[in-house]
Image (cartoon, rainbow, N blue to C red; front, top):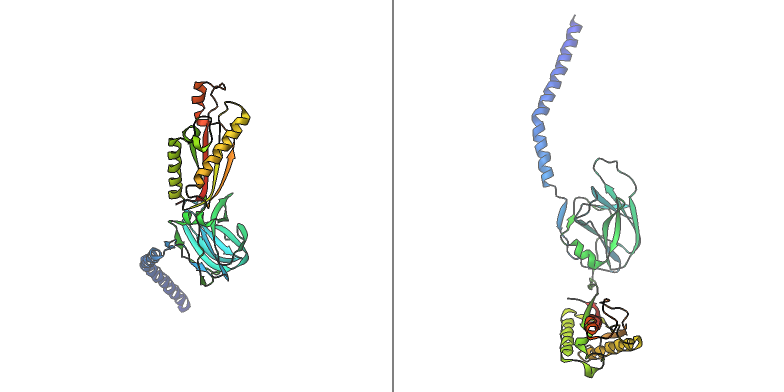
Length: 319
């Protein structure tokens, strides 16, 4: 009988202990949840905005990875350099590292909540890092997979505006950056086309300098002033002469070429001596208006006015 009583007593003690533990858990649980919520509230995955990085020595290269704000990939994109983890990028985030120069393999893996982690990246981008240079790679979505795509510096700097630094993980790759002289990033050259009506530049059916009209000279001077104001650097000017389809084809070819040459000579004399200037005559092969009559009547001459023109194509650095 005593043995049975002891067993019942022991079970009662165990039950009380368990109930006491449950009561303690119920009391402390809200406090633990509150602490966890406070910890999450303090956690920030994104840091400051992007700034153009300084220069580094020829012993290293810098790599800037980024995801555009409009990226539709689900989850974070994990970045790997030669198989080692660097960062996990959200949309609108960037991360940079300094690394050795030469051939590298950069992997990208899309991490989605609730999926099983994998050992291999979704895609690998192989390239050679140039000494002392900053390389920009954008996370690009191709067939629902992240691909690290090299981007020209000028375009990347525009796309990086407004992005923030990814800071919630620690890179296992990044080296200490050795400062050097920052290479100048020249803006990409642009090409623009300006059209001057030939009838404004020259008397009808003429192409020599003496046949340039007052309105034509004024139009040329306005164009030169605009080029000097808009283009701090002009790499190339290409002058193209056109004629209308009226008259003989050979005559139109010659007329178009002579008009282009006359305009070139005028440009050179207005402060463009050091600029490469080429000319071309295209006759009547590229008409703007094709509905005019082919006979040389006053009506068809007026109709063909847009076809009698000179184009100045400028290539250079725009302000």
